[in-house]
Image (cartoon, rainbow, N blue to C red; front, side, top):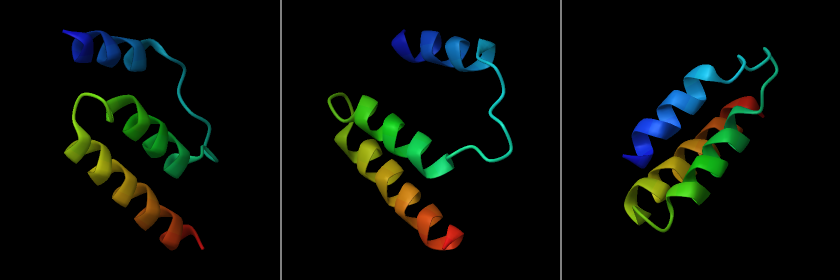
Length: 56
């Protein structure tokens, strides 16, 4: 149920600007999911680190 509300909140939030910090967003999501789904949190952290390597 909380995921449903989170999706609604993301949908209603303003669009991110072109220079949005995508890796930071992934890390924030990982932190939010760490208590409920540690495996998915780790996958999000890995994706954030991969995105940071691409940006460099």
